[in-house]
Amino acid sequence: MATYVYGHTIPDSDSIVGAIALSYLKNKIGEECIPATQGKLNPESEFILNKFGVQAPELKTEYAGCDVYLVDHSDLAQSPDDIKKANILGIVDHHKLGDITTSTPLECWIRPVGCSNTIIKQMFDYHGVEIPADIAGIMLCAILSDTIIFKSPTCTKEDTKAARELANIADVSDLKELGMEMFNVKSAVRGATPRELTTRDFKDFTMGSMKIGIGQLEVVDLTIIDEIKQDLFDDIKKLKSEGRDAVLLLLTDIMQEGSQVLVATDDIAKFESAFDTKFDNNEAWIPGCMSRKKQVVPPLEKVFN
Ligand code: MG
Ligand code: MG
Ligand code: MG
Image (cartoon, rainbow, N blue to C red; front, side):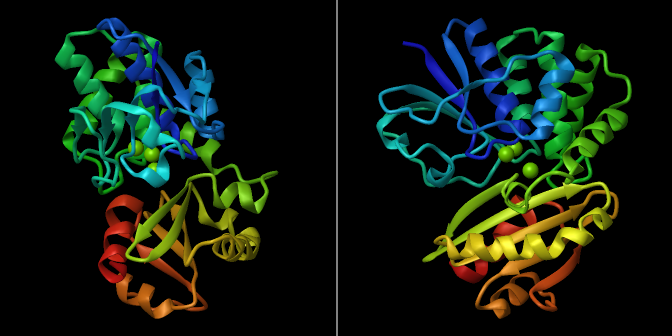
């Protein structure tokens, strides 16, 4: 039986591309693997796969009895509901260590870099397997996406090195131009419902006894959000009422390098203390804030755990 490789729920480009790239590598070294996704692709991921002519992973939400590799997460809340009935062969990730455990030894590549695909590039190098141009192209895009074109504080020298090498293979000469092309697709809000926007990149976290949802929208210009901001606010209040204690939405301006943070909560003081920022009507601009994993989750955990 083949092994499945999948990324987190509400997959982003790192999860989609990671499943494809890691499956390719595993197949090359003699492990039959199938790339999968737990959900449908976002517009950015569709753009990336189209651009380099790569097929989307298979949509699959049930994994009981399957052998699996996980990419871009190690949290139960971001894996399938039946993950405890699957056999986890390995994890490739760049987040804080989550709460997934295994009953047998596993292959684990967890490193503090800006993108899971940087680690997968290092796995290709480790195994001496050549990366085809189309897969190099999508891996490069995943790195540009996760590191916000190298501007995120999560970006390391290893990410820029991997991106340069992948760009060579994929014959991409202007990384910034490719990055901006991608983020323009990502910024498209017209025609999308508030729910599509608030949950386009959304993760639930358990912090102490609290369930906190955190969404992020990365745009090239925040003013395009202005006229729909109230709708987004109303929607995160709804998301809160659907079984969460609080919901945050980070509206990240990738050019100004900061985030307008909206919070649906009954206790804004906790968030003011976490971010050391005064909120006005549950809303604040936090300069320099671009990374959920590095600048938002850790201060919240400090306050709620
Ligand atoms: Mg991700
Ligand atoms: Mg990632
Ligand atoms: Mg991200």
